[in-house]
Image (cartoon, rainbow, N blue to C red):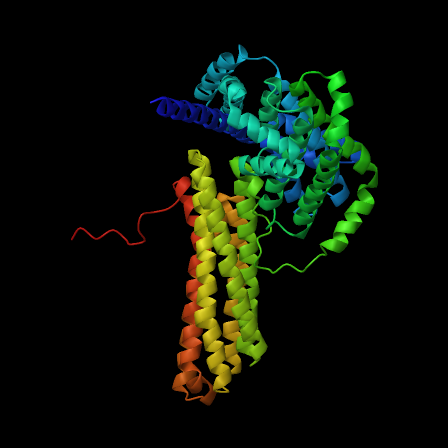
Length: 557
């Protein structure tokens, strides 16, 4: 019976710890997403414009991390800038060093006795969120609510650790961790990695220190592990963002790893003079956390140039395939306006790939070059890959919740991307196959027939450029002009078909041999234009400029 009561008590303590830890992480997430949704555009613009020198870049990283309560969020933003050559590797690493200090200062603020503030912030956050009509206000309310939940979680964690003081099993485990610093380093790193937050682990170590459950030396090692583990999520988050982003995240991980190893090795003798100055182990842990990031900043900031060159050699530049997305910024997903802009830019790039495919198919029809057919197949594969990335990106954005305007724009982007992908299929399975058939049979169009096909191609490429402009600008007048191109397409197809039939009746050899090819090319180009012109319909529909049907009314008699 006593054993069962003991098991129930241990289970209850574990549930309290897990619940408080989950609430702490959720509050941290709310702060990050709330601040990025409310001020993500301004924050990204400010970071991009304020990295003129290393000291200023480090200050930018510090302030940005204090604002969003997450060095991981700052790291991902900076990595996305580095991937697009918007910031140099040296300045990006300086921002990362400042971001580490920002996390330290956030830990100091959250470790203060602010229990009374938690319910106030929760009520205020809910009120601001519910009363706000726009995304900025709702984001601010979400951040205030997250801060309140974090303070509440810290209170719950503090209460949940009280029974641990008398737990012989926990004391035995932590005593063994103190005797095995390498294992303690790995244990703390794993916690920070699993929580995706060094801040949460540091606060937990502070609570353990305040309860005198851990020794001063062990507190130093656990802080070193939290800093090391906190550098792993940013690396994993940007591993597919490109060479520059991967290089930045890996160098940050290497710098933190070096600092963690040095602190772990020196923790035994370093803890003695430090505990004499800061007798409270919780305070000692906070000071160590700040000191760790500050020492890394002072040591590595002056030598970032050689470090950047070293990692350029370790991770050399590579030619990225065209199919790799260039503008789909994962960090912008929390800011719908930025995310939609990124998706639109990637879709415009998809349109450029379709233009390249059209031009290549025209060349393949003109001349029997097998290399052109291989190139068409490669471009079509790239189009499929980029289309899939756009679709996945917009799906993630939609799952976060969009207002009516943003949801409509996301639908337009998705629709245009789908149409462009269908055009790629038409070219690959239609025009490319026709070009291959012409080459295999060694056929040649008549001079007049080839000229008509080229004119149709040229007009299609012009319509593609208009469609790109309509998609980007959403200009109603330009949309009207694009829909008006339908008559040009019908005219070109009709006139070419009639002239082809005239040549066919004249029994011209080239025309007889290529009759099926000629008409099939006209049909496929007409289908391509139909997909392009459809981008104008949502714009004209919004302003009521479309009729329900093209049919004339039926006469009464």
